[in-house]
Amino acid sequence: MAMFDGPGTFDDSGTTVWLPGETAYETATRVFNLAAPARPAAAVTARTLDQIRAALGHARAEGLPVRVHSTGHAAAATGPMEGSLLIRTELEGDVEIDPRRRLARIPAGTRWGAVVAAAAPHGLAAPHGSSPTVGAVGYLLGGGLSPYGRQLGLAVNSVRAIELVTADGQLRRADASHDPDLFWALRGGGGGFGVVTAVEVELSEAAGVVTGSTSWAAEHAGPLLTRWLEWTLKAPREVTTSLRLMNLPPLPDVPPALVGSTLAVDGAILVPAGGDPAAAQRMADQMLEPLLATADPVMSTWALTSLSGALEAHMDPTDPVPFAGDHMLLSELDEDAVAEFLRLFGPGSGSPLIVAGLRQLGGAFAEPAPDGGALDHLDAPYCYAGSGVPFDAAAARALEEHRAKVRTALRPWDTGRTVPSFVESVTQPQRHLDALAVSRVDRVRTRVDPDGLFRGDIAPNATSLW
Ligand SMILES: Cc1cc2nc3c(=O)[nH]c(=O)nc-3n(C[C@H](O)[C@H](O)[C@H](O)COP(=O)(O)OP(=O)(O)OC[C@H]3O[C@@H](n4cnc5c(N)ncnc54)[C@H](O)[C@@H]3O)c2cc1C
Image 1 (cartoon, rainbow, N blue to C red):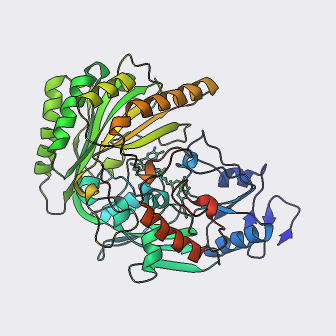
Image 2 (spheres, rainbow, N blue to C red):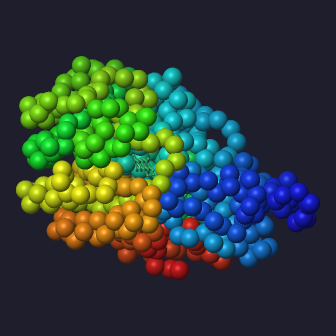
Image 3 (cartoon, helix red, strand yellow):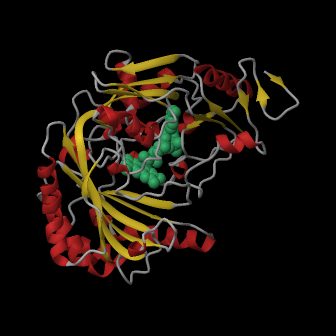
């Protein structure tokens, strides 16, 4: 490793390890969640396998633990990076689609928007989440709740292979026939195995998607929440929806009808190849019927769209924002739960959250996958997620206090379990694996990373080892 006069520290392969204060350090450490800046001792943007290997060599030489990220959407859910070397993965190459085998090969660093754009012209749907800017790797390693999830299951179940560089610099391919134990542990085991360079994901043949969002003034939240919960108990598995109470500020990207307190129900129904779009539209209509009978909406966008439509329905922010959130998997919600939900988030609640909602689980989400990984299904019927903007210290405090209030109030329905991709805070235990699974994952980690080079990258509380 030789030092040059210019910025950064170079090694023989041309890899540059950037230090705080250098522009490329700021690029490599960029995160989507601006409330959780990453400040490692040094940072690398890796585009090739050699660059990853060189970065690992540098970390060993300098005695730095290694951290990995792609987009920093989960920056608040990962431990502090001080004293580490951070590798940002932006592996070169495009998303490759094999239409015959219905497979997408996705280089690490790729966002779901690019995967959908590559797969859709082949009539193939990817198991993406609600946002086009989320990275495929972090989402899949953490389970992945897709708007097609009740139809297709947890997104991680569609992963067919994962390639990674481990602490010894070796490129390994983990799949059903190559190191199946590592393949099992990688899928939901909590990270810390190495630097993932690519994933292969099975796609679904699809003719289109019926998707959209309907919003009402929040004053109707009580009856709308009750009707939606009633519908979820008998909903067809083809439909996956979420219900959210929102308090949106008057920003240029926010449609005027959605400024202020509203309640939105959005979701998607994937129309299989050769399927009947009219039947999918009827399912959406049947879901909306009792809600529309309750009150007139202020906006509604449900329609048959191209396969990229389901990336827009949830209206997630696409530019980096500061946010602080919380998440729980909840059991069946009764009248008392509805009352608590309204007291915490409804009109007049004084909730500091921008959004608080429930994603509908069940269906294929609840079914273990044949040959699935450490996490392959979710037992709970609802996934709670709430998020606000800590724009100053007082707002951050208000969010923290509200979070504690929510946790106390929803305790009767809290299953104590989580979806790892939804955990928003480093202080929240990731309780999605049982003790047996945790010790099996630990054994795999000890085998592929005996010195614990990646130990800081393990999701908090997803292990008993370190
Ligand atoms: C606006 C928004 C919408 C979202 N919508 C959904 C949704 O619909 N469904 C859902 O399930 N989740 C959703 N999420 C959560 C999201 O899936 C997680 O935050 C996920 O971890 C993001 O992955 P990433 O790679 O983009 O993020 P990063 O923060 O870059 O990575 C998260 C973690 O993944 C690991 N990782 C990332 N890249 C690599 C790599 N190359 N090698 C090894 N490990 C790596 C690291 O442990 C890292 O800490 C959403 C988040 C946001 C902010």
